[in-house]
Image (cartoon, rainbow over all chains, first blue to last red; front, side, top):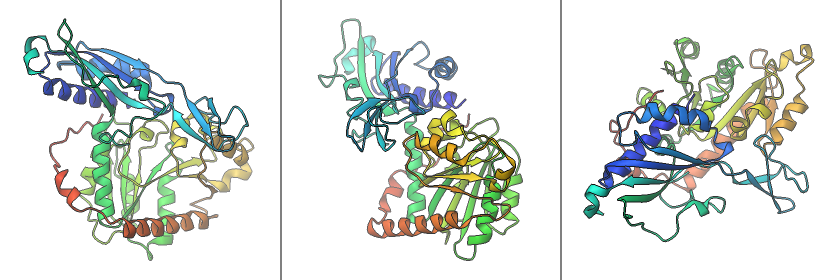
Length: 121
Length: 275
């Protein structure tokens, strides 16, 4: 249930960006969240209206991209896809692997409505 | 993770950054701004600040995580008994309610601050920062942060500590690393606790626990011990000694920039979300 804290952090950041850009509203927030970030996307989506109520992000769409878990093997040097609880090389079976993607927890971009103050840009 | 130098952008996610640089406002008055910040940007910033607090004083900070009742406080009591003549120790305790754990630590004449999180299921960097300001860190060598008992949420929050230690008690089941991979993936050490009960439990296989842990590509050591029966504590105590020496050596080679403390030391301007 830490998703509400995460949502509040997202709202704080995007509202600051909106203010810096003199935006009227935030239309869309793009997120990239990997399965290894420990964030439940459904819970995040449920918490977002609570965290964003009364802010510039109130009517923003939350678009979450989930990247696959990809690992690189330290033994055979090959890459493979993996499950969160089985980060083992699918080629040689070694568990000495490094994560290439799948642990992201990023705000990638925000779409702002700036039409009334477009001259600031 | 750092949000300013672009190191968030990895080969795995760089395609998410829009190409073409600064984006213009389109005909309908919409503008897209690239961010590439961590979802927990503010927490991570505060955590770095906490780490500077520790490093400026030569302190090693260890975050203890586990389910409720796996023996974190008992481990701390046994550790304090073994190391209090060698190191000055302080403890930050996190629980939803009560001062019980801090009182157990204070009974050993060790300073302890209790964070009562109320409804929050984890500690965050702001809570730890507030606690640090109520703790006299002068001459302290080692700070333990006992996180809220929870195998899910604490794993996502950097507190400014240096090392994560996860406890897995023999009464919990050996497949916990497979069920809670994010938590066990972050562990710098796995302690299998309540070893004295292992002969009585026919469903906990330490080899199986190790296999599930290694399946997370975690190369950290695993020690099996009992804090209350004083069984096999040596590996754990040696590990702490080794990490304190390594931390001091690292700080001697890379002295802390004390100026950093000032530019970000705006204690009261941060939002304090304790939910």
